[in-house]
Image 1 (cartoon, rainbow, N blue to C red):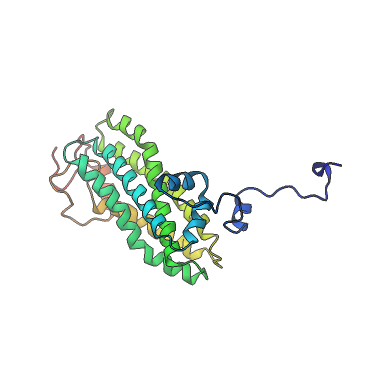
Image 2 (image 1 turned 60 degrees about the vertical axis):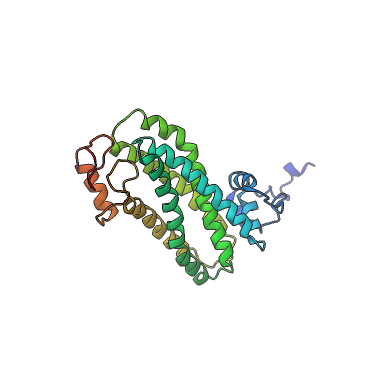
Length: 258
């Protein structure tokens, strides 16, 4: 009798739950080295477990560097698209702010993630945690580049700063969700006893990145200053943008051109 019709033979285990229970390196292809940034992109999109396994192998510095390089380049490309809405100095200012903001946010949040990881009972090394954060940034940046043609189309079709800001925040939110899912999958293989610390860190990371977009404003609109002269909480900034009259590619503060 065929195994399919034999109730004594269990069906093959597949899916996310199976993937998290199988040790890294047990699935064919996961032990294949990642030799260059192109391999890293293929791995994070098609074989994230392969990337997670390679981050556990020492030394992983070259792989982490490749992840950061891809994240930086993709962030700069997306930043150029963002800057094309206002043109002028924003063509170089927006890429610098977006790429720098992502990297700075990750560095700010890295110590707290490592502390939460240790408190949860995980055996992950600092280099592995750093690599997972680098993978998070790379996946976010790759997805943003995927959204870039859509963002460019709307940037050439509207003069509303509010609408373009909302569109870019939506793309950022989607990219962040996928990036955090990658981080969560990697965390599930670290033998942690609890995920409370990870979820707490996720909230902190989102707040830091959102606040960074306000601290580095303007990113979408124009201004006479590269950085704002007035400190502001991101909810206050968003409220001001919604209540102020939308003046084309200008911002409602910091000496914006109207």
